[in-house]
Image: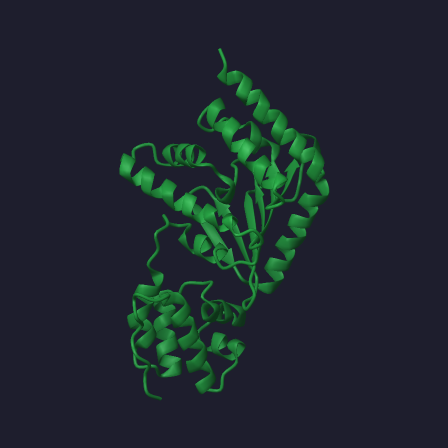
Length: 279
């Protein structure tokens, strides 16, 4: 088959690359599962590439060019599709959540990025990289704020956050920053923009004690799970794994305070932090 033209870098490179992948696969008469088998990935991974929710890595681009006989098209263009304004290693999940229709998230120690205020985000970035220059911290913080603008849309994505009580008590940036951060979370809940629940200390042991969890659903692609650790993160599209992690999230919801109780606790702690601000 004749190779497609190179991508226009002024357009959406990842979306166009996914569309070209779907076209090339269909021209070869292959299903997503069949193509995935030939390049040693799952069919759902191919679906994520085609939908633009996963970025194409050079090693996969080379294999796709060989199997689909695309004359090096994917190898040439995967670099443009891989460019990101977010810090590594979190760029892939930040770009996927921008396409998600629903996000379910458990945060064990921090207020999640989509719910952060600028001072809180800046404080997080500074402790994450204490030696980084100010311009780098500012760039990261602005990236976080740009991600949070997803919530400017009144309906999409649906965001359901379960916050561990530890995240509310950990004083990131001091009482003034914490008071503002918790008031922001409460405001989003009052405006019915998010669903927020608190997993209290009294719940004891639970199914997600090993780390943070994010589940994302999409209109035209299989769901994704993202597990985060210290300076690391892993995206998973295996259907069985995603189903298992969805069950973990359901267990957390069952152990958490109700929405009303959670909101009351968030507002009470915000008030406590506000009182600490005053002499």
